[in-house]
Structure formats: C-alpha cells, structure tokens
Image (cartoon, rainbow, N blue to C red):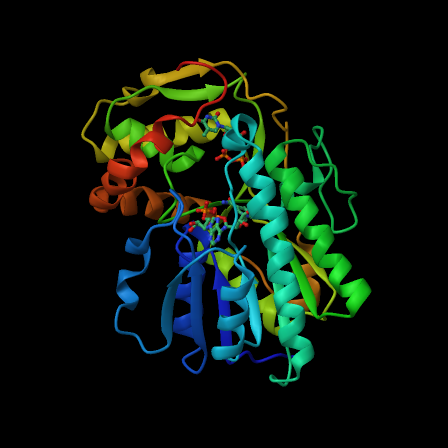
Length: 357
Ligand code: NAD
Ligand code: TYD
C-alpha cells in the first residue's frame, strides 16, 4: 500500500508539532503543496514558519476548522487529497479550568472537518484520499508501574483534554466504519523540541530556569512520561500517511520513559553549565506544588506495530535531542519572549490549575 499526496491540508500548522511537520514534509516532498489552516489561538505562532515565506509550495489561511464553508472551499480550490489534522486545544491544565473549548475544537471541529472531507473524497475530484487524525497516548488513560499501551488498549481518558481527543478518535473510526472513508489515526507520546509553547513541562523549565523563576513540580514528581523528539514524530506521521492501510491506528513513541523529577533535574544540570551557574544552582528553583487533579501516573507506548509494519524508528537519542532543544531555546529567546508577552501573556500566566506556585 502506498499513497503519494499532491495537495495537503494541514490543520493547526502554526502550533508546535504542526509547524515542525510542515518544515519536515516540505523538505522531503518538493512536489507536494501544503495549505496550512490555523485560527492562531495563543498556541499558534506564524513565527514558527517564517522560513517558508515566499515558498510556492506553501500557503497559510487564517481560519477555524469549525467553519464548514471555509473548509469546503479550501478542499475544492486546492484539490486537497490528504488532510493531516493537528488543530486542537492541547494543554491538560487548561482543559481542567475550561473544558468547553476542548469539546468545541477537538470534537465538534474534528467532526466538521471529517464531514467536509467525506464530501471531497466522495466527489471523485481527486484520485485517492486520506484523513489522518493526530492523536495522543493520553486517550488510553494511565498505566501502573509496568506494561505498555498498544493499539488494542481500550480508550480510558481521564482529563477533559484526553476525553475530547478520544471522542475525536472515535469519530474518525466511525467515518471509516460507516462511510468507508480512508481515515488513519496516530497516537503519540509526549513530544519535545523547537517551537514548543512554554506552558508544557520541558520548555517551561528552560524558560523559568533562564529567568531564575520557580520550577513547579506537580505532586511527588514521580509521574512517568515517554518522550519523543518532534522531528521523529513528523517522520512517523509522513510514514503512516504514505504507507498505512486506511482504517488503521498506529502508536508512536520513543521507548524513552522518564520520571518528571528526573527530567527536571537533568534540564537544571544541563543549564547550569550553559548559563555559567555553579553546579546545583538551578535545582534550588525546584518547587513541589499541589498535584494536577486526575493526574495520569504513567504513559508508555508500545510502537512495535509501526516499526514492524512500516519500518519507522526514531533517529534522535534523548541525550542529543534534549541538548539540541535547550540550545535552540537559548538561541531563540526572542521567540520565547514573543509568545509569552503581549496578547499571549494572560494565557501564559493563567495556566496552572493546582493553585499558586
Ligand atoms: P499546539 O497547542 O502547539 O498547537 C495547536 C494549533 O492548533 C495552534 O496553532 C492553534 O492555533 C491551532 N488551533 C486550535 N484551535 C483551532 C481551530 N479551531 N481551528 C484552526 N486551528 C486551531 O499543539 P501541539 O502540541 O502542536 O499538538 C498538535 C496535535 O498533536 C494535537 O492534536 C495534540 O492533541 C496532538 N499531540 C500532541 C502531543 C504533544 O506532546 N504536544 C503528543 C501527542 C499528540
Ligand atoms: P505536560 O507537558 O503538561 O504534558 P502532559 O500533561 O500532556 O503529559 O506535562 C508533562 C508532565 O509534567 C505531567 O506529568 C505534568 C508535569 N508537569 C509538572 O510537574 N509541572 C509543570 O509545570 C507542568 C507544565 C507539567
């Protein structure tokens, strides 16, 4: 099975993973056009894509995935033959303080996108079609000390964010089962890398360490996440889009589990040297705070199906990836101050749901 898209609609391409995917896909596919549909919430930033200004392969449209007429027009005008759907509200803490927008964007928005995509696929105006839903391991819920999520693990979402992603995943499945639409679904573990909004753990640590601000560690700090470099995720998505059989689900992960407190200590130590501080100085910023409600204890992905079926495996070691990521943030302080100030400042400050830090 092989599929060669000629015109991609990427939703949410001004966000963290979407923008990294666009850079990677354009470099690997000089024949394919990309239309990036993004309404630019606090998490969307066109600065992530300035390198593509003037590139004839790429165009940006500011708009909402919930705008059916706009989506229909783009699908028809651009002769879209594949939708890669990143657009979402993506932060668990925000979903606890304000779940409604998560349902509106992640569930209803996905349904509108699916419906317009179904019409495009059924119109026969393109030879073949794919709809790829980008999802998360969080739809599977929480693991104990052992075991892994496989594609067969039942969905058991615990936060409004993951519940809204699980709802969207089930709609994607339903469009395949009910209409025969050629859908695909990937579920990835925690990503890290450039252009990550500094409300998520790793960029928040880097940002706060530079500013000598407290480093909030939720609960006992022993929750476990499986970290994957965003560029490895981008390549995995391209692989699934081109090679997977319609209707399939693929887990994506780095086989790289870390307790939160160990990540915090590592980032502190790597930045001591780079910032000319004495060894251990940054660790003094660590502040244990009240736990996130419903905090999933452990995520761990079994990505064996993706490796055995389609031949994907990650390229980055964590050692290389985390060092490069820290250096990227140090070299891109202008980007960080832009996304955490001005119109973004309120969003940035109002993130933590567990109480004052
Ligand atoms: P992000 O929050 O950085 O970016 C989301 C983007 O979607 C932003 O550019 C935003 O402006 C846009 N957007 C939001 N609502 C929209 C709407 N209604 N219409 C159009 N655009 C809209 O998110 P991210 O971390 O890049 O995650 C992208 C996708 O990957 C999400 O679907 C998320 O669930 C999934 N995912 C993320 C991770 C992770 O570690 N960050 C891991 C696995 C899966
Ligand atoms: P996060 O980056 O929000 O990703 P997710 O909740 O989707 O896994 O958080 C990663 C882990 O780090 C999670 O267990 C919550 C924890 N965390 C903190 O301890 N402190 C923080 O300031 C943040 C943002 C997260």
